Image (cartoon, rainbow, N blue to C red; front, side):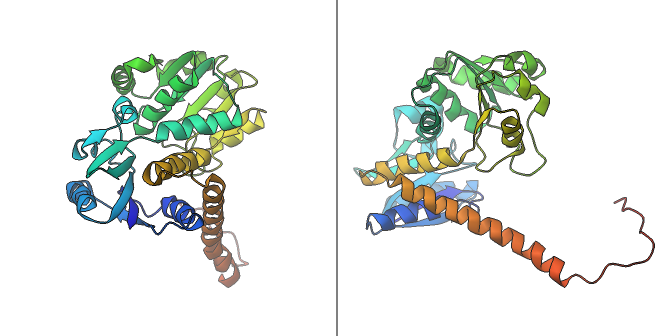
Length: 302
């Protein structure tokens, strides 16, 4: 049998490394694949899952909402979040579920067991924010504030997730919203590349001294480094990635996921990719011709 991740693009995904390690560890004869799928081909991809020897699938951007009408049934969590990241083949049909909520909630609880944030601020109103807001509700956060550079989009998301009782705070009022907050979550796309930070680093000083700063990007972002420099606890997106994957694995197989094996596989792959990225730079330094010893060249203007 096979399983796979559906998205566009998916070449960067760590899910195959993580899931294949879990299947091998438990001796389950399933291969997990990358299934790059443009939006126009999404219905055909879901139809192929129905016909093939498929255990299940993950769904990533940009298809988590588009896939919803293509499955036969939605879990309560998927309906609440308004997004599907896991498809389970069962009883001749397809069930759409969402394990991102469990992934974020479990990653926070692992770091601070039983913790209920008093004041949580979430940055961004895209798809990732949906699962975070629902997870904060499950964690028992007393106050949940959502800030987005486009207020209208934030209001639409809060209205769609009315049961969460989140409040929209205008981006220009972020300094006030952050005052005394004990949890800050970056759910924007800013942070994938060095030099990107969603808010000015100085605003982190407005957080409670014991605040947790989380970033859904699974790397040590500029935001997390700036927060750590102030002495505040930080959490990147790697635990969420592993725990949502573990929850998907358990829904497909009915067996406990080998979380430590999955986490180690992801960490090893990240190290491999970092080394591969660094190798060309090192080689270029070795093979570069000697620098001109003459007068310095003028700086480039384009």
